[in-house]
Image 1: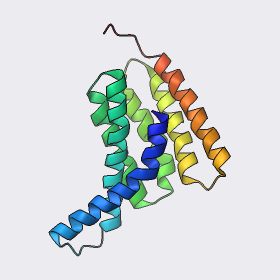
Image 2: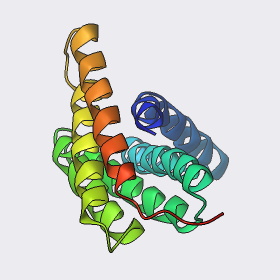
Image 3: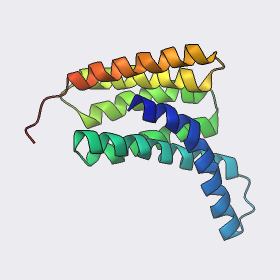
Image 4: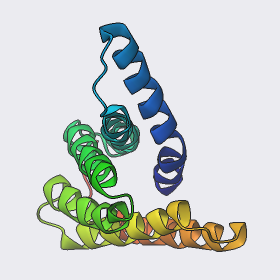
Length: 154
């Protein structure tokens, strides 16, 4: 899931800008909010990708919608002020974690910390080995959070 979150931060903004450009072109809009719409659409795509992976692995559809809303929130924060996304990502991860597993605060803490570390790795100009270390650390935090989820009989 952490790898999906890292890839979503790399690819979702491009897909969001492309989708916004296609919408702007199809509707022949001249409004100046193309890049902001691209940020929000990219957040929805990125959150949806992570939520889809979570829902497939953890067998619950609600994970998809909650993660998509969290991605939209991060995209909207980035549209308002780009560095604000570094603060919004852990907050959105924690809030999504609380809604995904309300009886397990360990999952929410792990989601918040992993989202913060992935955001740092993706958005700040670290060397590749430092970014990779942040992603590995986020994966370990995420695994720790998943370990605290109650087991379900399939």
